[in-house]
Image 1 (cartoon, rainbow, N blue to C red):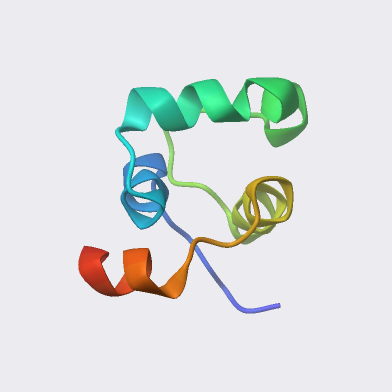
Image 2: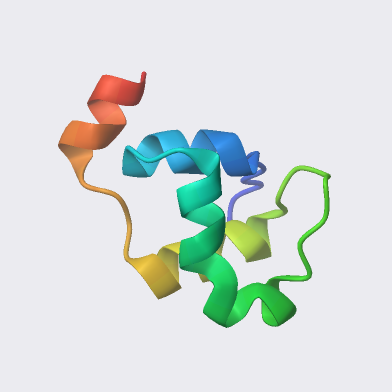
Length: 64
């Protein structure tokens, strides 16, 4: 596993939504994620990608 560290805002942008919408999407796994104000650790990012499926490549390209 690579050392992937991202903020919630960065991942929300990858999905093409605002951070508040992204947080609503994460409600079902919120306790497992142990969310805080700190950047997400690699295991948290992977858990989000597994739960929501990885964002489409077009959205990722637009976000860059």
